[in-house]
Length: 331
Image 1 (spheres, rainbow, N blue to C red):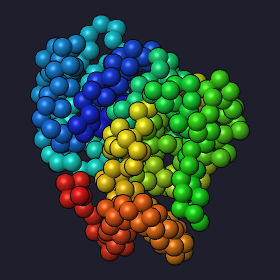
Image 2 (cartoon, rainbow, N blue to C red):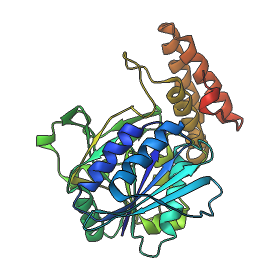
Image 3 (spheres, rainbow, N blue to C red):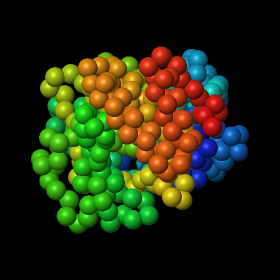
Image 4 (cartoon, helix red, strand yellow):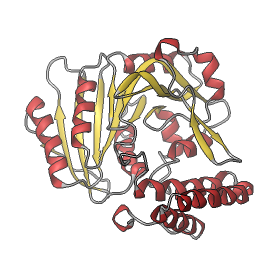
């Protein structure tokens, strides 16, 4: 059985649109919504939407100490969503920890074969889940599989088919970014290039999470998918499912301004998580990373973006000395 985990943080409109696309899907699945301590009106709107379809929820006890309340809806008839469960978390624990609440709940079910970590700002095409499942069943060495991610407002072009990282330049990239969907390459040409599956849509074999325990919560936001790729065993492979098309509202969850500048939260966590990743897996390359950080600081200074400059410096020091700030502390 496929379990899908959605993390909501003040994105109720996106989450509801994602849920509707899952209802329209051809593959039976169970959905676990983990609300990362959103505004009350955000979680309440999601609860009202689900209740309007499936009726009043039942309240369930949850042993997870990160969960304040747990609501459960069972679908009626032939609805593709066999059940929906809503976890109200006590705090905003970050992307990894929010997903881990859903991962633990899914792994507690004996019928869990696959777990799909799906950004709530995505829309899933009708047969995407079936194509992903069939590929995982056919290729038993696949541990994590990605989809064809296209832009929500321009679905003729791709966000990416998989992720890459240039360790010396400390830059991540997307394979076939902005490519034409009518001329997608073959899976066999793309998969050897994939360093990690893009985190907006991570289709994971349940056995992987049973062994690894889920995503690393050290990151809070960003680089969780790279960390997961480094923790796979020899013989476990990363893949891409060409036929599984998913629209993604890139950047909507963390925000960018009209000029494309990342939000303060995104700047801080991207820099902090990048250094944590290097400390864990590539410690000998940290001098290169710090050298590249000077270029980043210089770029913000050249634009007179002294807030961005300050955030990069703070994030670097926090990562090096084992500290972390929370979104409310980032100005």
